[in-house]
Length: 132
Image (cartoon, rainbow, N blue to C red; front, side, top):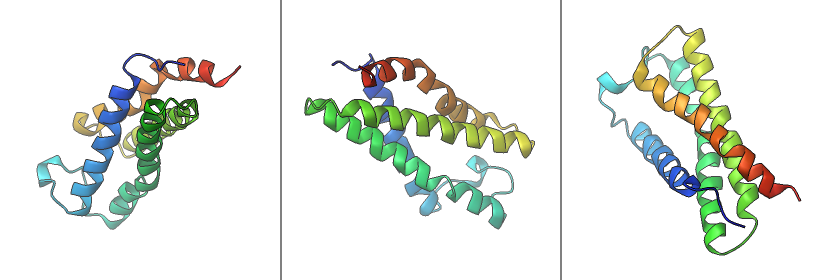
């Protein structure tokens, strides 16, 4: 079964971007002008790090899906579906927080809106591949 056009390109971009983001976050490489408001607040630092597990699950499942597809294993579909659902959840959680926090910085909103919305273009097609 074939993958929806462009899915693995987006997966690779998102998955590698998460790994890069968390690496530079861990190393404190981002300049202050790229950080979100109240970045030094320990509660917000914890909030940001609370995304680490789901973001890594997104990356692992997405990259594994690509690997399985290249090995001609139909199991790629399950991992792709999981990755898309987790991606939507991650984007929704972030956007919800920014709304409640009343922080409307496009630099943080746009990537998270992308994470919330792009899976909608692929979920139906991937789901159809999951069901007989």
